[in-house]
Amino acid sequence: MSVATARRRLALTRFANSFRHDQSGMTGVVILAIFIATAILAPILIPDAALDVTKADGGRFEGPSLSYPLGTDESGRSVLLLLAWGTRISLTVGIAATIISMVLGTAFGIAAGHFRGVGSHALVGVTDWFLVIPFLPLAIVLATVLGPSTTNLIIVIGITSWAGTARLIRAQTLSIEGRPYLERSKALGAGNWYQMSRHVLPNVFPLVLANTTLTVAIVILSETTLSFLGLGDPQAPSWGALLDRAFSSGAVSRGAWWYVLPPGICVVLVVLAFTLVGRAMERIVDPRRAS
Amino acid sequence: MLRAFVTLAFVIIFNFFLFRMLPGDPIGLYARGRNQDPEQLVELRRALNKPLLEQFLTYLRNPFDSTIDSTRFSRPVWEMIGERVWPTLLLLGTAILLASLIGIWVGIRAGWKPGGRFDRMSTGTTLILYSMPEFWLGMMLLIVFSVGVFGIPGMFPVGGIASPGADTSSPMGWLNVLWHLVLPCTTLVLIYLADYALVMRASLIDERKQEYLTLARAKGLRDTSVRKRHAVPNALLPTVTLIFLSLGFVVTGAITVETVFSWPGLGLLTYEALRGPDIPLLQAIFLMFSIAVIAANLLAELLYVIFDPRVRS
Image (cartoon, rainbow over the protein chains, first blue to last red):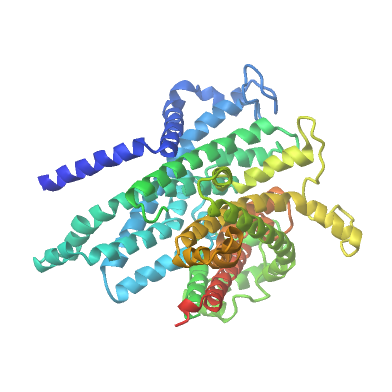
């Protein structure tokens, strides 16, 4: 075990060194660090009153000024403060939904690659079904049945976005299944669970991590879309919910660009940052795929 | 072929049972604010109190039944969908056509000289477009080009498919529709072409490593003809397949962009159904979109067999 631990630590150091030399990957890390700091510090820096419609002191749809650097929304709140608070909600939903998606995807992928026969066919069938069915209509249907809340939003995104990961992990599992050490462990009487958790999982894990960052990017876009359609918690001002309110309160026809532009820029920056980090990790972990 | 039918069968089963899980009283929702004969309500309630299996069999007999009414608009759902299909086809058809032409052209230029100036610029741009919520791009285009800010005059209409009262069967009416089409179509083209350009670029880069290109060069062919006659036709195959396979992604864009531009298609209908929520309508829309995507997938597989002799055996 200690040999394996030492080897894994070495691999990790080597990974960190290669990553540090990847320029676009590091750019992504810096952008993410800024947003994560905003998300963590938001409750300390922003007084609760800033989010309260009844205590708002700005005018309706006021343009940017010194006291409101990004102008005000339809009820006179500062868009900048709403945006900072939105970072917290969008990132939380994004990361939580990604965890569900990765756990499901890895479990389905490893199981589909490990087992043979009917069970494997059934798992592949379920994965294919989720891959074919259009994401947004499926998510809309699920979210309508579950009702609008942040938890339900996380669940809906989680169960509609795992299939791509499952397919990737299954392919990797199949290639690991043929290796001699797995045969040896089978000969020594290792059960299915032991084989999957001790041998297959550590081997697919780097790929899972690289895929995670790419999934977060897609998940955050999905969150924005679903919240825009009013399927999230109406009380939680995520970036998508901000855009929904801007749209339904007529910010577009008033030309209130300061209300519409910033949430979108934030989404683009965060999604781009996760994509850059994910692609950099993929280049290091799996150089063949990321040509 | 078989797989497509199995997938469709699961959509229908899923569609039926998922909505039966909804809490609340569907009849109460249906009858709210309406002068309904109480006896008719009793009749409706009796229909819903039938055993689940019996209801399922009735649904299976014809999921496209013309008696399925929308709870919000009190009209047959399939009739409403039928009306909304054409605007969506017009918008998506134009957008996909333009996006694939531009996307493939960008992908070829970028992928033929990877790492070059054009490649770095176009890959950067496509990555940014790829990270954009499409409805946000639409809202920004609306603010800039139809409301007008910073001294830019508003040139395009704020929404709809034609000006009120315009006769859409005359040539002037067509121009009017075209003028309304510009902004929503531009939004979708920008979002879709990012995807197509990235795939075309990747598949051309893959193709560049093939030995037959070295042979073509060794024969003394010029760079342009190596690209045009040898590399591009082969690299096109995965891209064209992707265009069909990406219909699920296309549908997502249609729903939000049609909402932003009040384009009276299936996407806007989905948004209207959501506001209810109008369950029978949502159910029908989900079934419709799924059928479209499954059909596109099937078509992609068939095209692949026709164009790529290697998979035929």
